[in-house]
Image (cartoon, rainbow, N blue to C red; front, side, top):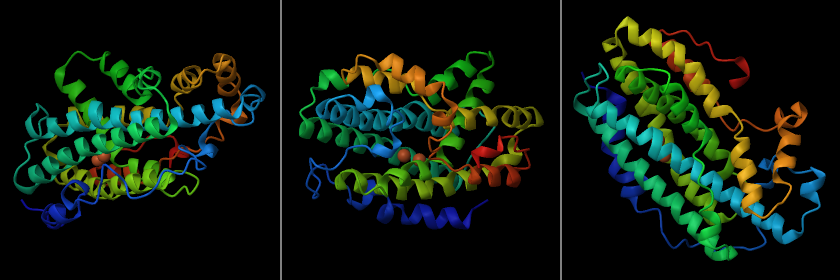
Length: 309
Ligand SMILES: [Fe+2]
Ligand SMILES: [Fe+2]
């Protein structure tokens, strides 16, 4: 079986992917503008909290830079802890799924892309540290893994069979790959942040537009290889994956504040995380419309809460 769209995408990869096209430079042409932000201010959940507003400008700047570093860490965690291992499972793992031909080629290209994305995001973190004079030791205190990974680990720990933990990882990857595009465009289109960061994120975004098609085509075409037991399990865990990707990570936000030297970090986060008016106004930065379409195509029920659309 061959897939026409995948044929085109895999042939174009050498010209269009960021890693092969040479469009990414470790030394960006765009100058760092200290007046611009590193992370969009409108995405900081504590704006307006009196204890945050009381901070001096230097501390606010550090909070902004550490927020940007934390955002990039979340991207790298997703690539290295979820997406890359899950894509590798599609090639070599015990998944009831035997891919052949260009289905394998497309997945292999995506794995190469993902590791390069991690490299790109590490470069932007280093540029931020250098330009803002933040010591690496300070940024290295951001050790907590992203919520979406912690949630994956917590769910996987409840199951003893290897096929179950493999499928959980795969579904986390599917939800990530079919919803990351909006997560990236939210930042790449924001004119208040560094132009080099925006360029980097938009390169990543272009690759992810291809990945969304790749994941969908590969799984939809091969879904009939899954037994009823597997598809029932996928249907059961998919809403939990969507939840994990769309929940605000308050623990990381608290880390961001405390690592930036904000003594009332805990108090600020406690106030805003329990204030529904604030927590419900934080943009989701994800669209789950592709996941809904995917469910329709493979014939599994989409039981995800409607706001996630
Ligand atoms: Fe990626
Ligand atoms: Fe991807």
